[in-house]
Length: 187
Image 1 (spheres, rainbow, N blue to C red):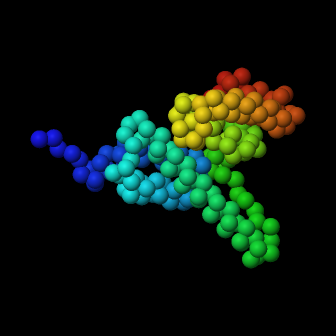
Image 2: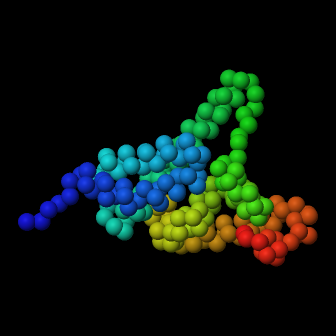
Image 3: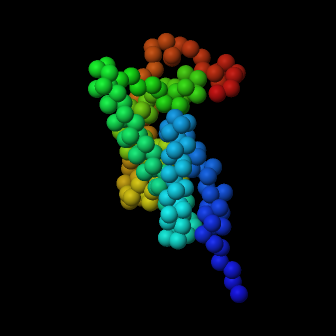
């Protein structure tokens, strides 16, 4: 007789398999305190939908979609809080840099992150899913509910925009400074 895993066993298996990638996804997009909340929301959704969750390989993409929605909800809440605080205090709210700008100290990485932030949110997301989460165009298409062709086009255009913005955003003296690689250091 075949033994089917209980809901809690299946949840544990999904959690053990995906907590790392989902944590990385959330922490790359949110400050730590908010990222933990977003990560918890992902696994609350897993628990609620455990019987309706897709099988592999669609499960991974479904989880990225849930994480994406959780991050977007958190960012919307953050923006509302900032606006409300600005109205209450009568001051224009100051937005602190994201966790990437704090962690990343190297000039080239800061310039790249700054250029990325200037892109439209959809362009940012396709680049992040490709570069950070290492998803294929087909997987990104499923996560973002787009056609593969649309994702490929967005990726190409977003990369071009990012390259232009990264070059434009560098100060004039940046070209005269040797890069860490030219100096023999680490990147």
